[in-house]
Image (tube, rainbow, N blue to C red; front, side):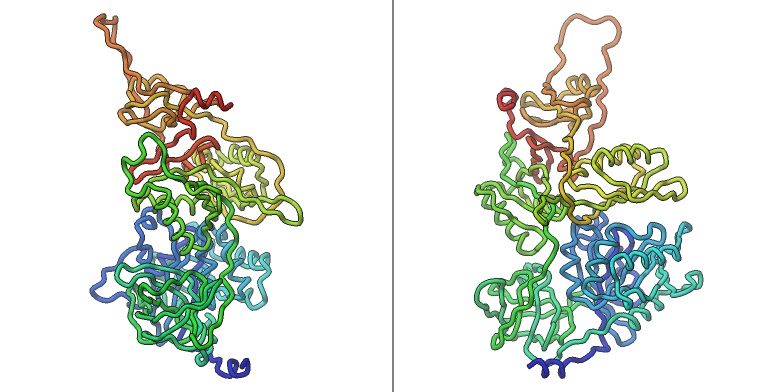
Length: 611
């Protein structure tokens, strides 16, 4: 049987499969836009769209890629299938899944910033799979570009990650995705993107596939269409997949289940193109109607010869939060899905389609423990759910420890901080207090580049501090590095909370008299309830305040003018900043229209009795 398979193995000269990997905001999606324009992948009736593959509203608002997406372009008789992957480590599960569908990687590195933490994280995964990188040094049109130095940095990183001699012999393309220009030598003479495409065709690995033999396909990503139902994206590993064929799904446990492929699609530019059949090496989308109950990692194969591919393995989650129905006095005012059953079903759907999200048992039907790869991934899930109409509460994130060689270990992260010279000393002091270890310090103009290794639990709540310390001019990137033994305990949040003492509407008079001692989270004229957190105390310890107090009226006129009640603008609280800020006895209340911080126990006298 093995001999037959080897004899049927062939190389497809007409196909290249590549994943585009890079750090956040290094230009992956912009490069895909430029390739669309150059190859004519967009039809005449389609208007060019900036960041075309970032279709979700949340992706466009945040300017990051959250979900991996596949497309294809045609160049000189070769179909290049591209997978645009997320650049943030929290969505590394997306990257790890799609790397199994490609034969090479397009490594994009900023010509100014150079190698960054996420570059290291994803590149290590690609090298471990034996994929050869094609280096694209992007943003060469910037005056501060240092392209040759970046190439050396990438080479050093590959050596550090244990790359093979073949992987170290990588081709280099200097590029400006924004200007749609590329060159393999002298970027100043670049005219278009043809040198980049020529390099891909010449150096990207050609898929070696088994064109004959029984069908083999693995579900890598799930989608949904309101007319077709569940969609499955993956690569045909062996044989041929045909529309209308009867196939079998092999789950992780249990017997194979049969279903019929009702629709089969490929991608061309931004469009989904219906296909009659697909050969080994093609990345396709299949639909099987309501009868198809497929999950990520399941194998689709010939019913007569059921076979199971190894499940997709990804790194384990690093943090967890508890999600529960909203129990505040304002519960049910703004959301459509309020019950624990509705929340639990939605979380289960997410865990089935996103294998880097896990649901853990809490022993309660009303509380769900959600584990993920980082605060950003959890925050994105929360934002998606609130936009869908869910209302719930979320606890402070906590670190997931692992036992390694008999010792309790915690996740640690690479931290990259770019700060003005004036703030570097303060950043060094703050990160040292959070058990951060300085690895390197580099001067670039009037800014310093600091690289640390710090425990993940020590970084909770630090991003807002960092932005304050650098007056909004700093850049902070984090990426999970691995696990190290747990050392010392870290101090909790130093500032206390300003807690409302009663239910009502906030008044300018009350807020004016506490703003000197606090940073406000709410403006005048909004409804609050007893136990809601309305600000941050400048000192340690909580302070219970009546923020609904009005000025007493009197018929006695004071000499001179009354004091002006000018209230400072409140601090805007987002999901990520709220998760970082709340303590163990506090939760974030999430509704489609509002984000509120509150104490778990609302009544002040009950909180005192529990101390």
